[in-house]
Length: 226
Image (cartoon, rainbow, N blue to C red; front, side, top):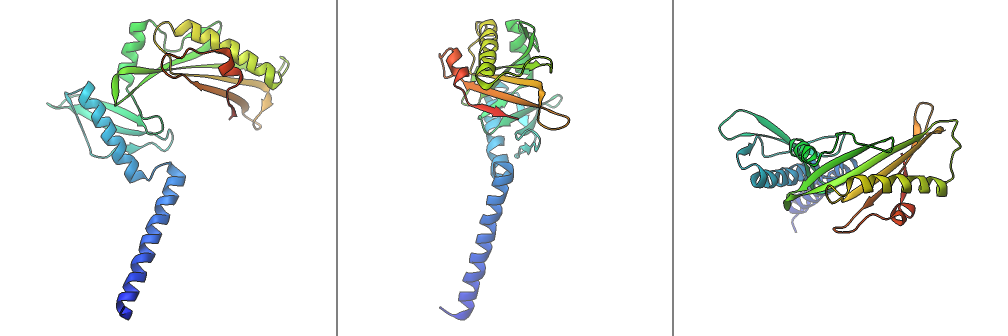
């Protein structure tokens, strides 16, 4: 191989290595190489919209990345002009968040925006997969918090409390529509993450289709802190 060809090959190899290293760094910081994530997410959003809202057209080929929430969003408008609709896509779960459709479903089911279950504020949400846009993927969540004058429970006792509240939440809302995810968050004012923030414990359970929630799922679920 001639010296000039050898230098060109080395230069090309160095450029390729730098490019690949850049992609790795982008993946570490964003979870996706942004270009790839934007294109894939835009394609998923277009697929969903074509099935659910055929009267809408995307405003761009790319989806915008949300650094705060880690999702992607794309603006759509009516084919003949007029109103806009902004939809978001979660690349981790592969689901679309459609706030208008979620609100219509929640109201049809008679569920409050922030339902209360035995004195505890809960949350109800629905998202949709572009592969099956007719089936809502429902998630339930509940937050528990004790004041400083309440004894701090050990982990076993805390899991029992979380399991009790999770089962109450599930019993109250699961008859309306199948539930796919349920999460319970527990905090105690005496347990501080730092000077200004309470440490919270979280258990999330994914429920495969036609699988009901059981206490054991919460009692044995992975406990995270944040």
